[in-house]
Length: 284
Image (tube, rainbow, N blue to C red; front, side, top):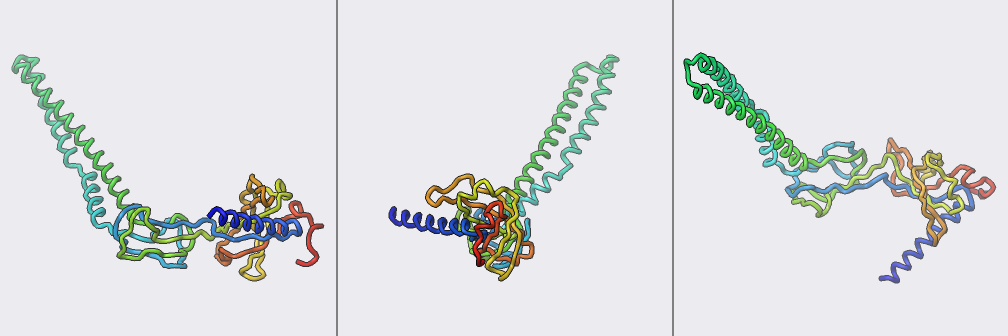
């Protein structure tokens, strides 16, 4: 197994070296067009897959619902929590009780000051008022708790609705309605972001320091034929591979109409400041 790993490493070094030699010999460098990102959407909860709203090759937008997991119980729990959070009866009853207890206490206090009623009766009315105020506070706190429970139940319900994290294309459907899905066990859909595209270019170390972010690079993709596009440098590796003497440059290519497919090779023409024109081959 170790021997196989060494053979694979050697082949990778030879490949990188060949691409780097091409980059030094002329302005055209070999490159590979890839999706900007590819993600596999799995289920965060265990349940029965109820619906898959998209199919392979469909375009999706960011936030679009792409699949749903059966959620009748969660919907009922969420609706119950919403009803509890909207209840105003206990609060209104406590407020009415406070108003009545306050009037009762004020009357008995005056009567106690005029010696018409005992001080104990006034104290009892004051205690009744404080209990009513405490009941109002409890009612308000219960309503706040009900609101938090509703947010919790709604969050659990939202976990059963899968949305696209970006605008892109469906590249694979691995699960179908009726199947049981679980967290960490396979994906339901695989999505790829194709606008912008990510282009990887391997350059010889002689070009290190000459490639800067936002530099414009002409791209000639394999498909469509004779197409010419302009990409920008997104990042430059700060580490040079010692075995091949190369480093990787990542380009970003806008692809709003998705005319350029991912997974194809391309050629990149860098400015003369990176690869001087005197090194250009006679024949393209």
